[in-house]
Image (tube, rainbow, N blue to C red; front, side, top):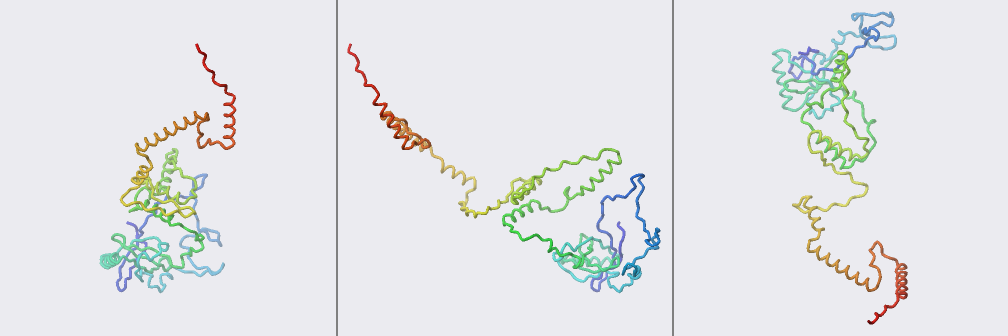
Length: 369
């Protein structure tokens, strides 16, 4: 059981709930010490008085507020305890608000509030159930470590949790960090939403939410302790180069997310339209799928066997007629469209044919027996 770090009470109107404050989280980070490389001696920070140039004990150290470089106003722990604050020993609830109205950037570390004894059990349970049924959170003020703080009380399972909150003036204005105005197409927003859908989870459990860095450091320390080589670095997934097309990046991200979850890798992100306005597509007939529409187009384009036979017969008759005309005139076959002769070429061919006919000798009569 974690130790109590503060004791007091929750002030809820005229209701008082004595409580202990215990830590709600644990830090599992691996911590390192500084040491001397020559002999592995620990390097420690010592508290030294600047005027006397000597190390001082803890009971010789106090705290105060520095007015100038030479004048300090001492303030003791007893002075702070005697401050006239109603929140010095109580967590005073000042309002109840919806959780969605609280900016998460103002919420800090969490602490469990434990009822102090049997007397506090009933008012503690009363407050817990009221918070759970109202779906609201309580905003409270309390004083720790010499300063008044703002807190948020909410329900987690069977316990009440206190979150430290920052005052409004402690949150910096982000207006100077915002990018210049840009245009975002509706297709890009839909692509981002599609990627969000593929990455949506019902919980935060799994290897994706494991502290891989701490595990790697622990393996490294164990390997060095056993005087063996540290574990080999796992092969990193090859990442593509910089993608300038935002829609292409979204398309690829959706496909990878679905493949990682064992789903069909095909994404449903529409491509971003170009600078020219695209024509509005005609609506497909009701009751027909894309495959049926494609098959209909193909069927309309193809000819039936009867049509094919008729076309072939016509082409054959035409070819025979052209050949007969060619034999009669002694000219060549009609050239194709790509080899269509010019007027000059036709005149030259006709002249050559006439000359050849003139030079041709007359046929001889056969001799009689």
